[in-house]
Length: 210
Ligand code: T5A
Image (cartoon, rainbow, N blue to C red; front, side):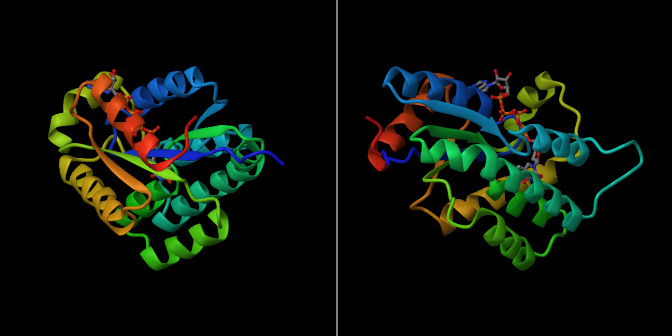
């Protein structure tokens, strides 16, 4: 068997620039001759994309409990890992994933999910398939307001107020402090080119990317 690929997740609050960074990373890594898969959570496989719709845009007037939400995210994740992420890594591809398990620990805990239970579910679903590297795009939520508004996304989290987004920021920062060997905090207010440069530097410092 050849060398396995690398798994990189991108995290942070809404509108932080994850999709923009992923596009840049894909180009830069492909230019190095690497095979790159870009995917997202919740989603990434046909079944998980259906779960995404159910989780993020439930029928009007309906809401999920934090536990049910976490189970949905992890149901989607199990399918995504089994059908796309693990096979891609095993065949030597690099996987760039727009959000992964850290998002469940942050968002569903803020909504009231019990952190111990969330971690237990995550252990079962994710197992050893932890990202090799996680970029957390960080900025004060008020500084990202304009960007968020530009996107015209309307899902169950977009409607929340600034204090919710502040908790999201703190949640991701806490994860970065807990797992410094995996996580790299990037200032999301830098120019897209500078954000990409910071990410590539971290890849070069921490992973073999040649
Ligand atoms: N969720 C997800 C959970 O609750 N639990 C879970 O387990 C998981 C996996 C959807 C929601 O799902 C929740 C969390 C989320 O609320 P999502 O689809 O990732 O998650 O939605 P968003 O976080 O809202 O992601 P977006 O794709 O909408 O935003 P991005 O990717 O962070 O930002 P991006 O790149 O689209 O950029 C936004 C705007 O800013 C500009 C872009 O051009 C764009 O207009 N921009 C910049 N401008 C200036 N400088 C930069 N550096 C810029 N980078 C981007």
